[in-house]
Image (tube, rainbow, N blue to C red; front, side, top):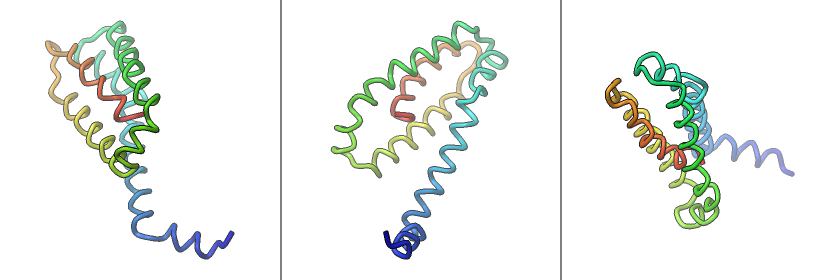
Length: 120
């Protein structure tokens, strides 16, 4: 292995931008996925633990087909477009969260259907 070529490639603008994108996306997902979503649902929207459980169920249900067909999807649209779709889906989901009110809290289940594209 030629480490000089490896370091040169890792230092290219394309690779650095990719790592920065993934870092930012990972931090954003970590904030939402590690409990803040459930705190938001329970405290701010007045949701129940049953709703939180349903959220998890919906996310898993809609991830499975994406994971299953991921090879086909990547072959068709490519890695860059898949990453772009993931980023845009995430932005759409989080924007949707900001529109929720205690009266519309169950709409979060529809937003969570997009989680498969975001995560898988």
